[in-house]
Image 1 (cartoon, rainbow, N blue to C red):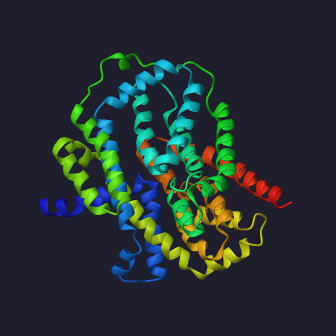
Image 2: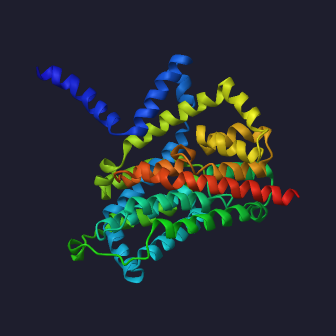
Image 3: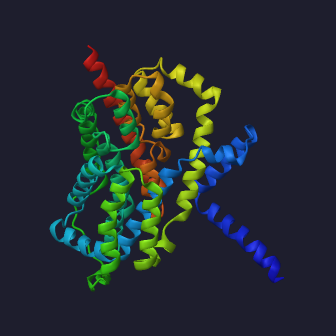
Length: 379
């Protein structure tokens, strides 16, 4: 009987996680369908996975969790609330901070900083935390579109264009400003001009730990420098070892299933991009208003904006493509890896519905702005 229970318990655990995790469930189901349509060895599937990206993601998750466990985010959150006692002002500040930060340290790194900070506010206030995190995710998509190093697709297209850093930034500036202004126009709709109410239980002294704090503060820049130099795997292993020594709880409490989601996503989206029907759809969409901008937007809604960039780069002009895949980061959650990271870090009930409630209108507004701007320049 015990043997049967031991054999069944992993199956029960996996089934429960699948049922309570719509992204993992959908990616697993899609993988089964694609494997049935195009059977291939597991070794071929493994080659489709961007392992270096997963290693970077693992390191950032560990550093972010260590910072969260230190307790200092709660302290900094209190200081933030002391200066911003109104819900709308707080939302505007977090949107601007997220957008500017993402242009400097990339969109995913920005989220690993601002989302834990925002979650710290949940313990002190009755703020709509899920909505705040949704707007932060939208803000990093908008802000990161400005910089050649703001997101992976910009980095790739910057290298492809041959432009200097400032030249690329100048081309993307109108889009980035437009996206941030559109998002800021949505803030008054989403957040009332109301005072922030503190929870009575939040007035106590927060538990603070120095070791996890310093491990994160020192680890962040060192990890990013090592990654930039190409030492991705050693950097991730180093962060893992440090966390096992000074913040072991961080290692065992990060969302490891998020990595499984990304493994499945890399495989699924790579296979989808090779389907002949997808190539035919791309050729058809080029005839639509907006041209390469619209193709970039729509393909991002299907396979995410980084794979869309790789698929289209060789057969598209880089500038409208860069605008299209940046706009395509809005809309469906799969449009950008940053969206998935934010939603998984949040662990807030109803956040998937809340995300699409604001992201889909943002996609429509951003798409319209990009196409109209392009048409105005061509007159």
